[in-house]
Length: 193
Ligand code: FES
Image 1 (cartoon, rainbow, N blue to C red):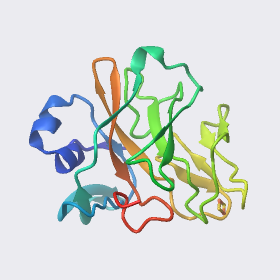
Image 2 (image 1 turned 135 degrees about the vertical axis):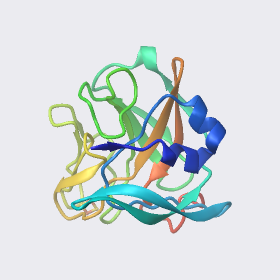
Image 3 (image 1 turned 90 degrees about the vertical axis):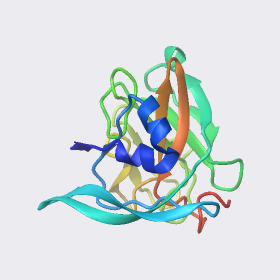
Image 4 (image 1 turned 120 degrees about the vertical axis):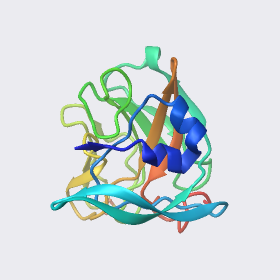
């Protein structure tokens, strides 16, 4: 797996990237970040079978939202929140998995956050967290289950797109949501719900 601080810089600018000691762990081959406010196409390095490759990505400035306190998290007890707004399909969850995960932050790199809406046909994944498998699902509509240790990749079922992962940042004891990997189901633009 590969780390890439360039993504944080792309989303929030060089100043925020310098402030952040957190690194973003990525292994998706492609991702999409969209915005109706400010967008630009940039080249982002992602790993491929042949090595690193540069791919174009649409990037945007997302809101920074405080979600939780690091000191108050309990392993396998999800915290619900909305991101990037309070609109349709924005319901999301943050959880300390107790196991290192792609994109995980914190001392154990195990704190991750995901959108709750199934990427297949929008099934609600609230209440489906499986502590034993560190997964969300099965979706009540067509049974897709998503692996939260591997960027929300689908494990089984009908969906073929990963669950949108929320990019997190740690500042002292405060955990903030600062961006999104992937397009939220039901939206053509993540920031225009
Ligand atoms: S809507 Fe979730 S698997 Fe179909």
